Length: 597
Image 1 (cartoon, rainbow, N blue to C red):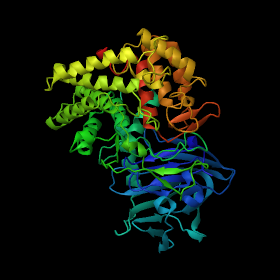
Image 2 (image 1 turned 90 degrees about the vertical axis):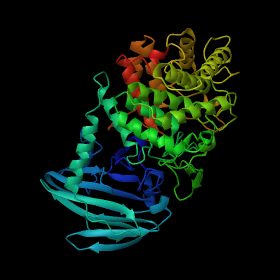
Image 3 (image 1 turned 120 degrees about the horizontal axis):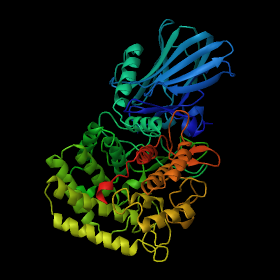
Image 4 (image 1 turned 60 degrees about the vertical axis):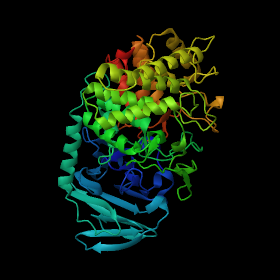
């Protein structure tokens, strides 16, 4: 059975990722991209779905782990009765190859390790043809199935059923390097990796990137790690920013709310972009803007709410029977049916993020501004169209208040671009549409009795997404309607101390079952508290939400405060970017658009 979600640490080379458990097992690894088929898929099943386990032979060994400073080099320290040793795991960056490195370092005494390797390409649907290569001094195992090949070096491996096992021993001062290199099966087998050089280059790459982070306020360690995670989810070549590195980790254990998050949601990517821009990373903004131009090229009216990492459009959702699911949560899905949804807030998020880049000093190019104008035409053409909302409901489309506000924000940023930055456009029309939306929202999006903003028109429910209204400048954090909304959120959505997205019992999402508090929503409320003067409440909730971190600073999508378990896909960009904004608010940065109010 796969480990608890919080037991996994992330390795990333900014092209793909691997997840390593506390027990030293690589249970998730897709190659060569985040959204490729898995090579190791035990995360969504059992060991037979593919894994690479490396740990001391002595089952009594105790492990502690950490990242090597501000990097994604994972150091697991094993203490045994016979000695102490470390395993340094990494995916080398900027090498033009896909290597998974597991360096074993003797610290004291002598430690015997065992390794268990089970390769299962194509989401465990392809049992590879395996052959031994090399010799006793340089053993290698070569596995091939269809388009995929993997060569594993550094330890002699003997067959054991449809798996391979091996042993190695390190004494104090000794080092053994184990590597697994993915490559296309039609290509020549890559030469052995220079592990010393790859390790040094990877450490330097991450450390230099992190050194540019400017944040000396509260929760600095969490902010730095969160920004590192956001960079780890950004594809080095294409500029696409994935929402998470996993698929089908459940929102309800044993349930069917299991989705594939290894794609680029325009909303999530725009919010990630904004968090990075606010901390000085304009190069990421420029790379993503170019990605956006490529992805939406042609007719912006055909814009999707999500794309593949290189801008692919065909993300049809399908179910896999080869992976039984995380601890039995089925089905496992690849692709995402939300690709066909209309989500009216998305253009607003893109416009807000691109304005943040513009204000930070990234000038608009003719093509990028032409795209933004075309996107605003699309918003105007769909002005009265119900949508599926920020939470991608699979029930009846509605006029969601948050979606309407983000449409307002889209036109607002268009007006500001002309008035404040000298760009061209039909500013009078945009201003008219912006003001029309504002009047409509205040007339139809506020509960007549309670005076709070509502989830969608004609409802009495609240929704945590309403916390973004002051963030984008629609109203002040201390607007009476906003304060009433917060009070209603506290009453309806905080039964566990953290914030739920909405009441699933209302049936608005069209899905069976329930879910757990969505971590980004709690961080949004921290930002709201801090911006409206409730600093003590903000600090208290921030401390509580940060308890959802695992031991190496990673956040999943949701958290079960009762069981103390992470829930949903991991690591989740939405959770980490919301944490960064919450910490900024506690540091005195009063929201995404304080200057717009």
